[in-house]
Amino acid sequence: MDYITGVNKKDTLEISEIVSGDYIDKEIKINGSVHNIRDMGDVAFVILRKREGLIQCVYEEGKSGFELSEIKDAATVEITGVVKPEERAPHGLEVRITGIKILSLPSDVMPLPIAKWKLKTSLEAKLNNRSAVLRNIKERAKFKLSEGIVRGFRDFLYNEGFTEIHTPKIGAKGAEGGANIFKFEYFHRPAVLEQSPQLYKQMMVGVFDRVFETGPVFRAEKHNTKRHLNEYTSLDFEMGFIDSFEDIMAMETGFLQYTMNLLEKDYARELKVLGVELPKVDKIPQVKFEEAKRLVSEKYDRQIRNPYDLEPEEEHLIGQYFKEEYDSDFVFVTHYPSKKRPFYAMDDPADPTFTLSFDLLFKGMEITTGGQRIHDYQMLLDKIEARGMTTEGLDHYLNTFKIGMPPHGGLGIGLERLAMQLLGEENVREVTLFPRDLSRLEP
Image (cartoon, rainbow, N blue to C red; front, side, top):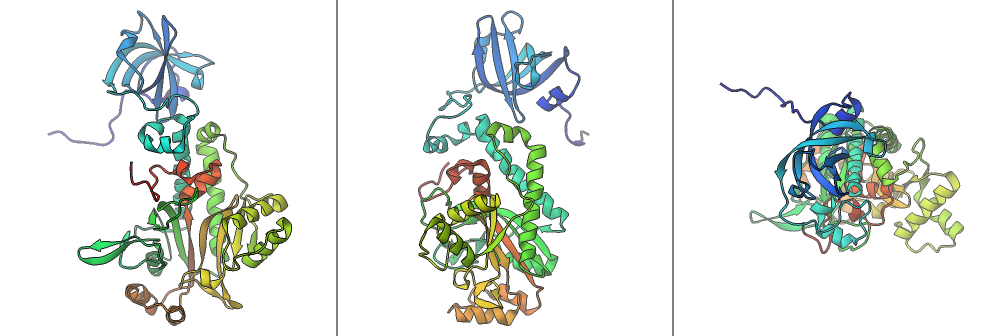
């Protein structure tokens, strides 16, 4: 009887193992994809791409046990060779090839020169050739940093006593209402793709006190801007027994501090490849909505056109103001008008025309919306009625409040926008693996 007893130990090494171990002048095995080949005549440099980056392998005619013509770019191979020091090579070493096992050969050429350090091509070409483009070292580094952000979010919240949940993405009613809902037929019944896990995560506060989720959300917005997607990844959390909505802002600040430290420690290679300088997050200023509008109106001589929301230009100017005045890349804008917030947002007792809510702006772009929620059943009913809404489709949500809920609040962070601003990209699609927008349904 044969048994599977755990992860198989391979005889091939990873780059980090070679770099950290005592392998100089020793023969090793390493596998990977041929990133490119630089043929110098009797000698050729075969650059191997692995999950940890690039490693230089050296082919010597008559010594490496095969003909160079047998391999080509994008072939996957297993190389046997001797490790030698070489200051000019990545990691300060190279592998002198003594043998090769060809695992696969491509049947076509690369549509773009992915071995180049920077791809000088259009975003449209990048998106049309996504699986090839993402093999470029700089392109794939963007998504390692996105991984680091999600990892930081998860790790930090686990440490703070949060429980990870997974809520449905098919529902009967949108969490926020409005016209930006994808509607479809679900076994002869009307259904929607969820705009947010909001209603579900509030329900789960009554179970676990603190919950979080990372997952896709869907917005049927007919925007074709550099900052909008119709499907994006939302980092959501909800926490109970709060004293005020400032507890939510403090928790997000803690997440950012933890995550920037994590990126600096575990993603230094990607930060260097992309030339990213991490922002300071030791403290983040906060300003009320109306005050923020007034400050930028006065400093930049800009007329206030919409008293109930922030226009993209205003967000940019608020970010500019707080960078110039306080050297901060982040700013919490608080107390948004009630009419621009969903029905579950807690109104400010001091002035019910405003809410105990906030947006976090990062370098002049909104990346987070959050705040305190209404936790009283009758207050929810009153606000729904005052807005001319019905309770249809909200029965299960409202029943949660009938049986008691603590004061609570939470937020949603747009992963792609956060990554976009962190990396200094001009278009959110640059940091989205497979974007979905008005015109793109594939790949």
